[in-house]
Image 1: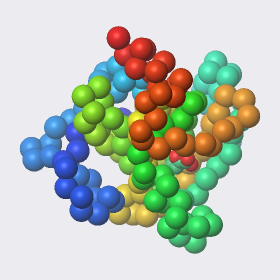
Image 2: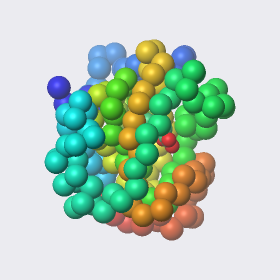
Image 3: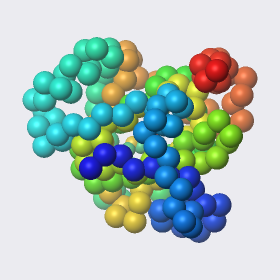
Length: 177
Ligand code: KMT
């Protein structure tokens, strides 16, 4: 199955719930594409020797990679990290994640500042463009293992909203028109 995304409700109940509107209001891959989100489905069972992944890394210049496992038993400062991930922010570079196991939600803002929730699971490779406001949360399964890819030396700095004066933000906004 491909990626599923939807516009979120405005309830501030548990962030791990799906927060769908009633009725559900899907967001298409095309809409995500217009916001600069890149998506590919791969076979995560062969990630260590996958020619398709190699090709993407070569084409996109994703020279760096590591693996992060977000689970209470594996991630130091788990609760604190989850809070940081779920605080609305942007980065000066693309955020590229390849889900190797488990699942999680990437929330992004659309052009009208509405939240779109992107449900990712095993085999989903997603890239969020530099300058897009976003956040991440685990879902109710409380576990994800993901490859982090980066062009060059990784910079993990997050600029919390408001960051409208940042170069990456200005360039991103300009790219939407
Ligand atoms: C990060 O910065 O490592 C994250 O964005 C957390 C989500 S990775 C599945």
